[in-house]
Length: 351
Image (cartoon, rainbow, N blue to C red; front, side, top):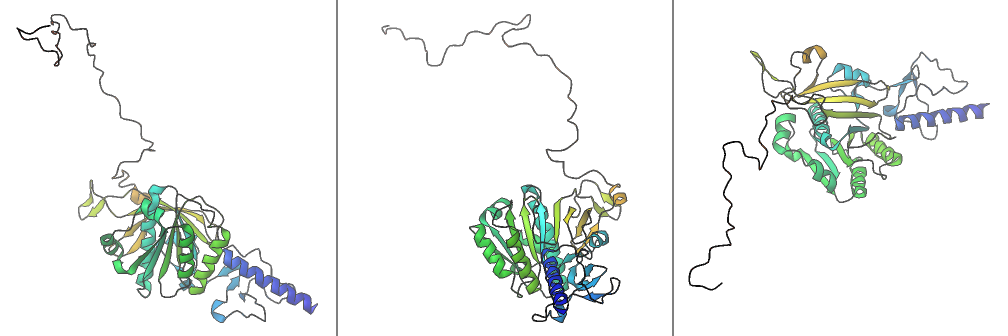
């Protein structure tokens, strides 16, 4: 009986570790038989006696749900989004940010740079490494140095870039950089759904981020959702900018703060949600745009894209013109023109 209880405890500890790596919910994990734990009393995750879990890595479980300390998450400042993500984005983990099309790469990059600004404001101002392939930077370009400081408070020398010729090289650089504690964060930007970035590769990157205690942000251009080890996946796109606020009210025809439309594709709580956040570059915080606030200025400043739902402009009056070759009454027929190369012959020359 003692051997069976120890075996069940070991299995339970392994299942807890797998759930932690994959970022899945833990309410389905059952306590080992014969344990004296109560479901309503907080309990620590079990570990093998040969490999005890350090005290700083212990996970508190209450009613089957993993509860992490508050400082383990990066709060965006938008209360509803943070609540849907069960506290915010995990700091020591792999997080995914998707753009449905290549044109959304700017919105994805802007949102991630906003998160980097929050990270640097809450901790040491360490450098950030941005990794991508030549194809990625050719399609989306590089961030503008002047905008980094003006909008996000990031000095140009704090953002390092690594341009790899192949995806295999970019993954190797990300795998090595994710384990470094000298970086505030690591950004890996890829395009599409490459076969090399499978579930095994994302598990390795997620484990590296957990070990270093640093976030690893995976940016995907025109990528489709697929199974990964990232506990959080956000789908981003640009939202219409509101008019700039002045003392006299909204300034007509102006462009206000950058805005993002965020859809939760995957999270630890599995709660769906769609939010519109504005980035305040002065205070360096996110502010959620509510429906009643947006109703004051519902017209986007920039014209909609080709996929707009607005009907085409009504046609004007139809005018009738005479057909070519049918002159109106009273008009004379034009004289036939002589080709320029056929000039009249001069007198005294033969035919």
